[in-house]
Image (cartoon, rainbow, N blue to C red; front, side, top):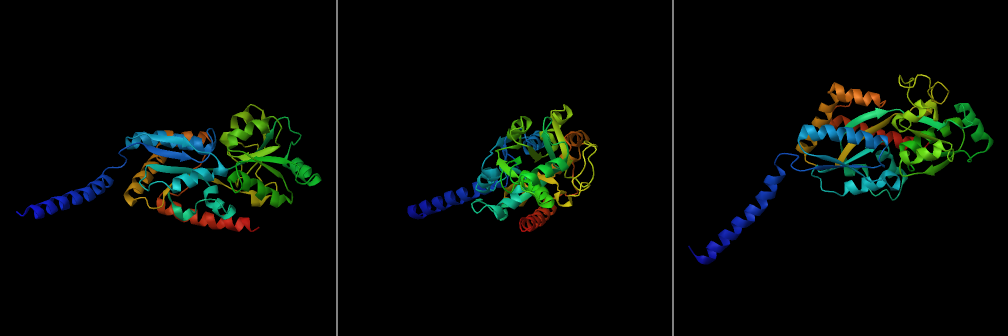
Length: 320
């Protein structure tokens, strides 16, 4: 064979191999290495707790470590920006709440849009509690409204960032009550709890897990809950609805997201593992202990349809 032709044939073979190897590696079993679950809030909050519960389950089911990494900051946008720019291979996931769909419509520098993501699956849902310190003069929601009407913009509340669930629920309540509050931003609800407990901030709104033990130990007092009906976990806490603030009826949802171009097979593997966890009675019992509920969303397609609807609802709320 002509030496030049032999050389060209060899080079062509090498080039073909270099193209095929990555493709074969990509088409191999998933996951083949540890998976990162980036949480948009600080450790100790509901998003973090849920991420760790599912990470433990997914690690066992898929035979690879699912490692939780907290990335709080910029009102939860830091984590969203980061994950949106990672490789769409399923090895970097985002765990976030409702605010992921709202923030791009609130912040001009959000740094991401919902089209940058695809939903993998919903983890759970939860109502939100409005809590004050046990030493607060606010014994009821009516007391809080009266104080806000007496001194507009003076009563303070803690929130994680503009457009987050801790912000939206408080503002929905304020809108319905015809009052204004002074919001104080924190990197996470768990970081705000000590200030509310000490009375440096009047109240906060967040999932029960953030304050449940403090409520049980009578160090904090829950004035209202955002669920449509009273929660079995807090039977003595009235709903906003029964107190006359229907607009403040609101559920927090928590989900797993990936960069939009993730392969369908990888997305399905992750989604199936999440759904399998929900069928484990011991696992769902742990969720109920946290005051969490499971919705009827059971596939990525359903979750993404829900996310689109949630985004539209969030935009409508902003226009109120």
